[in-house]
Every structure is written in C-alpha cells, then in structure tokens.
Length: 243
Image 1 (cartoon, rainbow, N blue to C red):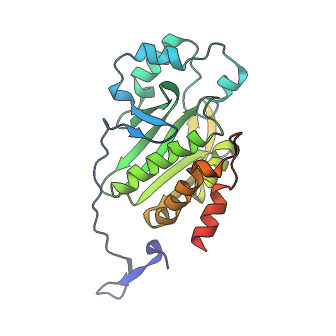
Image 2 (cartoon, one colour; image 1 turned 120 degrees about the vertical axis):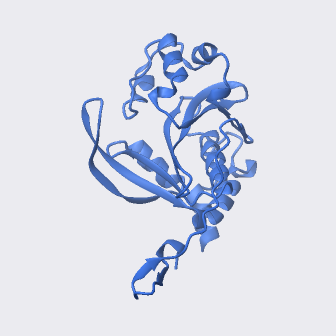
C-alpha cells in the first residue's frame, strides 16, 4: 500500500490520514542547478536582463515560436524589449522561482517552481518555455530531473504539473516524465479570454526513489546512439526498475 493510501483510527474510531512529520526545507532561489547537458540559472541572479532577452529572442519570429505561447498565460513576446519586460517582471507573478535554462552558455528557455507550499510540502513545476534547441532533447529531460531531484531532496512530498486540457504536448510530457494523472478541473480558469479546463498531474516522494534511478539510467551517454537517438525509453527503464 502506498503511503498516501494508509489510514489510522482516531479515538472516535474514525479513519484519518497517517501522521506527517513535515521537514520541508525552503528552496534556495539563488542556487544554480547543474547537470551533464544543461544548467538552470536563477532568473533573479541575472544582472543584464536585456542581454538575456536578446539572446533568447529568435532571429526570426516564426509560427513555431508564437505557437509555443498558446497555452501560457501571456502572449508571445513581440520584441526584445517586450521579452525583457516580461522577464524582469517575472511574467507578472510573485513568489515563484524562475530559472533560465542554458546549454553550455546559451540560454534556450525558462521554467519555474510555482505555488510553493512549505507547510504541505507541495510545489508545482510550470510556466515552461522550451526553445526549438531544447524541445525533444535529452537536455529537456535533464531539466526536469534537476528540478525534481532538488525538490525531493529538500523534503517536498508532492510535485505538481498542470496544463490546459487541450495542450496535448504538455499532457504527453507530464506522463513521460513520470507524473500521474489525477483528474480535470472543469472551467478552472479564464486565460486570454477563453475557457480553460485544467488537467492535474502529480509525483510523490515515495515514487521518486524508482523514478530517480530511471532518469539517471536514461541520461547515461550509453543510452544514446552516435546520432543522439535514445536506445531505451524512460518508461522502459521505469518498468524494469519497478518490476
């Protein structure tokens, strides 16, 4: 039986959840996270936001670039100045920790830890923008590994992933990364004047033990051909290690 399913009886012979001794440590918003293929650098450490925006903004605005923002709560940036403003204001949010994603020294996207609840040991990974250089790459998977590992190491019990019901790419990514589908919040939000039904996914601390081993095995250089194609999927490693 999983921990989240365990129950106890109180003095009134009612079923209650098991006792939780919370020991969640705050996330260091000034700590960079480094991997083999990618590095995550806290946005609040960036001194020259305009230079960062210049490096992130595409040489040519394409349909692929604009469509990357369809399901994000803000419009695609229209200029370097617009992107600089969005970055400097942290996309109009407060209390989130944003990371600039770098391959070598080149910024290729951003991602955030959101809705941080230390008392409950819950945090959400969201506001994800992966450039064309990052999408469908081993570096993208390592981005998730670095954030998941950092949060679970700090004692978080639950990590969430949420997306628009119609965002099929995000739904597919959540499942591939090892999150479990929990359900849909109907008419959850109005985003850009349109209805949003929100899908909820989660990963629990007890699940991370096996998932971590699977991530590490998948990220090994020996799991890729000379052309960079994976030999075994992340799901295949997980199935083996959880058997």
